Length: 241
Image (cartoon, rainbow, N blue to C red; front, side, top):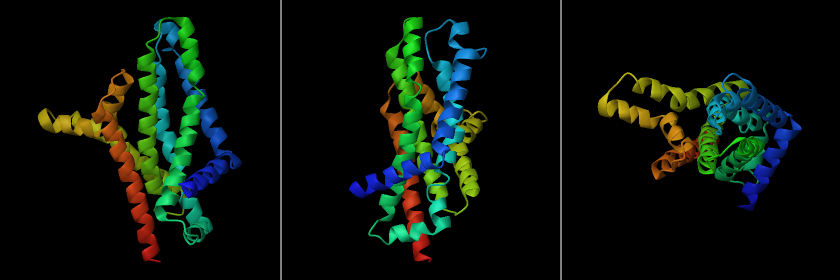
């Protein structure tokens, strides 16, 4: 565990050293803040003390930001040749994958933490359903965690960050849009199955303030699958030389 945390701390520090963390935070806060408070559908014009607009905006901004955060995690190590060096220092594939993944989750958590003033401000505007708001934040964190795992998996395929970003975005898009789009073309059990395979069904449920173990299990399954495949892919690359 100590090795994993050391890798996570090093990766998180590299985000700030390269200014990526600052760019992500500024872009996320700027986009979410603008649409939540100043755009035509903001909370003032809607007259409702909730953060549904923020959650809807964050749902899409994090769709793009998560593969942008993970694109360098393993791809950059492979490009510079430090991945092989890292894996020869009694560090396992799993420790590398989990450590880098945790750094990405920490960055997203920090971005969400920076939006807590939205919640506080909302409490001064009117009566707030704090449970629903808390569930909305949990939904964003769960969704991001799942997408980050897929992004790390995508980054394990290449030494090119742009390729890693595009591959990660494609993987994320499958769950973010493709399944729900396909579901709209079917009825009955087929349509419902496709709908449940997509992110939107589980995100919408949680953001309404409903904590269902099936939603948590879905996000957790995608996360574990992404990390397991990333570890497997790293091991495969090492075997192939």
